[in-house]
Amino acid sequence: MSQQLISPELLKKSDKILFVAHLALGDFTYMQNCFRAFARAYPHIRMHLWIDEVRRTPDASQWPHLKKYALYDWVRASGMFDRIYDQTYSPELYRQSITQAQAEQYPVVVSFAVLVRHLYAELVRKISPHGFVVAQKKRVRLLDIRKHLAYRKLDAFIPAYKSSELRGEHISALYAGWFEQLFGIVTSAQERFPYVDIPAQWQQRARQDLAAQGVPEGAPLVFLNAFSKSEERSWPLERMLELSQRMRALPAWRDAWFVINVVPEKMEQARALLARSQVSNALLFSAEENFFQLPAVLALCSLIVSVETAVMHLANAVHVPVIALMRQTSPEWIPIDTANSTIISVKSRKGWITEIEVEDVLACIQAKAG
Image 1 (cartoon, rainbow, N blue to C red):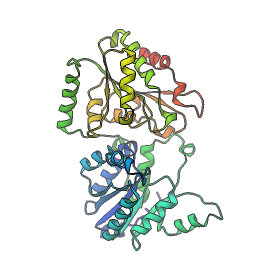
Image 2 (image 1 turned 180 degrees about the horizontal axis):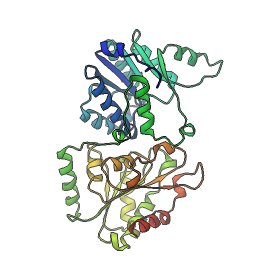
Image 3 (image 1 turned 45 degrees about the horizontal axis):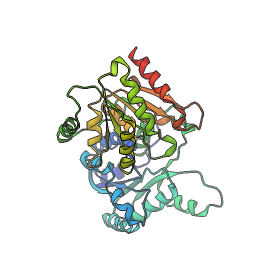
């Protein structure tokens, strides 16, 4: 391993550090371990976190939804960060956050952003005009002057990566590698395994909510998630409803109840679809109140079937078997727990999740039942 990018001498005399990232739940599922390793290695450094909202918009009608992003609940509850910049969803709040961050006079700022990297290179230098700043760097065309100037402002950089270049490396190993390059922190494969500490109040709440909806105590639970932020990674909700009823025809799942995950903006449409389908032993679920509603319910399940999104990774974190419906485009994001995960991939290289049929999932479930 070559010399770490941020010198031990600088880290020794620094009292705080700012991490910048456009985090999604899946990112934090694996990066949480890296932050925890940093806190153990440098207990004298207070960690601050800037969560940049890539959906930032001047449209005020979008702000209530963006403000309630579930990730914020999890990051706050982790207790690792002395300050969290989580109001970057409007242009004005973004400007205010920059002003607040500048007042901190950070000695070290690190960006993990993998989108529009040059803009984050500019941001970290703007936040810390005189500190040591690091960001991701991508190869730049000769005449792309703005990007050249942005990257010249960095004191060090993390090379950009492509999925095709990882050669089977898992995203957790990539994140761990960043922290090793930056700080000299080495984490084992076991230390990279995701975890989620679910507060007791949300564990109790999950049981109460299921009972209130008529789920008998001890009934097998199956969690079905068809939704992703991108259309190409989503599965039709109708197929999940069909899957639930066909599973009930199998002896092993005859008494099962099915918790069907729905994003808040699709809930009304999902209710109408469920009513028309006359599907039984199924209920709709959305973690609208708090992030921990989701892992609390997942932890009570016997099986999780999910498209390629945070639910798939949280299944590993709560140690529940998962069937993951995946595209072939991002193999570094496969579930980390190979013993408890089954992957059903689309057939074509750039195919959408809709290429996977109910029959494919049902055959997998039957095979697992023996």
